[in-house]
Image (tube, rainbow over all chains, first blue to last red; front, side, top):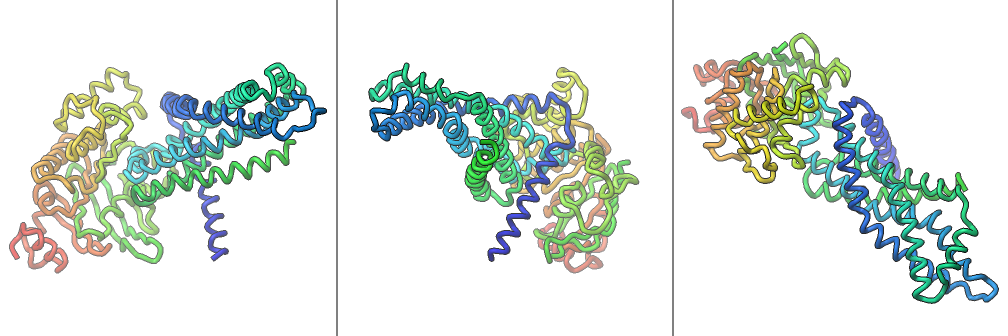
Length: 251
Length: 250
């Protein structure tokens, strides 16, 4: 039973790598991908903005209030709250929380879209026309994700700071000046690079894992739903694993 | 290159042997029909021919070229010479009717937008759907979707036209119209047309060369005239299939 699961895991991973390789072959004219990339980028970027704004605003606010709650010593300056919130936002909250949320929104969308195309024979139609369906369907989504995830994460990081400052003001825990002093006192350029590496990696994971789940759907509407759920679960797990590996390797 | 020939095609799914050593020559400019009861392997055979499924044994010759020996890129070059109508129509639901028909033209030709629009209008008019360019597939009936599928299939002037159960699930009048269209397009474009069906009315209306499959085996092949001339001499499974249709006397 366990052995079968392990073997199935290896088989799926091999299939995933082969699909990735195939998605970089048989390229057609650039204009075709440009149009698709634009369409996917709008869906990934613009359509996620509202959700990312709300989640980031509250994440920043809650982190500020909880950090303030834990700092009870009068010897610790208030600016420490800003430093802790800012460092957490850059290193962990913005890239990881945003990506986990987008795994649900973007990942399930990619898996269900490609899965629906599979069960309605649209992928077969592409293949019969002589078009490499893997390239046509996966490449624009992959590039949309690896370009726009970092943009969304930078935006999320900014909004977390805004949320933190607002919550500090409203609760009286820390004023904006102290908060900004905290941000500046612990800031390092590498933290931003680390955040962008994470965003790029998570974008890659979400787009490719979800595309893989959708591409190999067999059956009907029920299986498309299952593939969509699997895409979210596996992407989320892989994000957490990659999060740890990157932290261990780069910090 | 428009002759199509399959030799000794065999296919297994796991331990299930679904196609047994099938050979057949599809004639250019004719409607060649693969018929048989549900589950006999007709669609699997069609998918083996167009490369959607790879058979374990056998050869598929487009002209003198064995399709199965080619690299993926070489296969794609062959595939650009064929059009296919799917059972589900397989229209891209994010595109309008016009965009669906224009899609292969945009991908594979250097035509200007005006030329593409002219060709789209011609193809849609040819299948009786002039002026529907702006509609989405979700706004069309089943029969209209099949006709758009046909328009897309002929957009690039294919040498081969494949149709998988082209009239299943349609009312008799629409089904006959689809059959007529396939026949007309075969004559107009001189395509090698392959139609998979279990509808004997279609066979009687447009069939010229016939391959009868039963449980994955080619039980009979020949012309429609041969089939109808001496029904008593046909294999018993084909006789039963014909009689069950009610189109020939028991």
